[in-house]
Length: 132
Image (cartoon, rainbow, N blue to C red; front, side, top):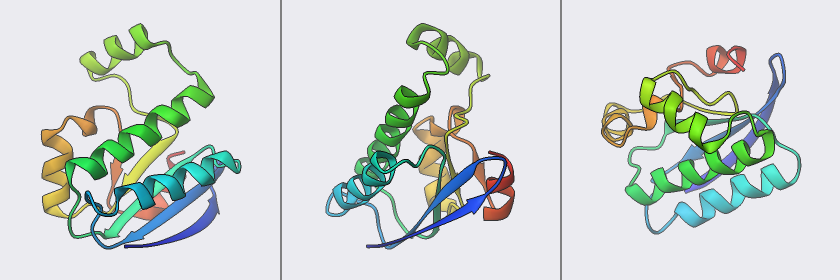
């Protein structure tokens, strides 16, 4: 797995994490650690570009969820009870982390695990950056 990081300016600075290779039990910690280091160094809006990721396992999905939680704890936009209610109603999407360019297999995994209920997905990096 390889990770490249760029920053683009939308309404806010967006850190784009371009991942190449599988995100699975052998690589998820590298992915999560790299992204957490970006957050520690000031990244507050993150787009994960999965264009070159053929496979993501439950460990990779868990890493994305951990990043969601870390960014949410920094921004504190809603409390836990309000978040659960909004997620159950389908009215919450994270304004802090989004993903782009999911393969059909990853999109299926994303939907089966319920991630699409709270993390927006895009087919185009530019449109994703504009959405922040």
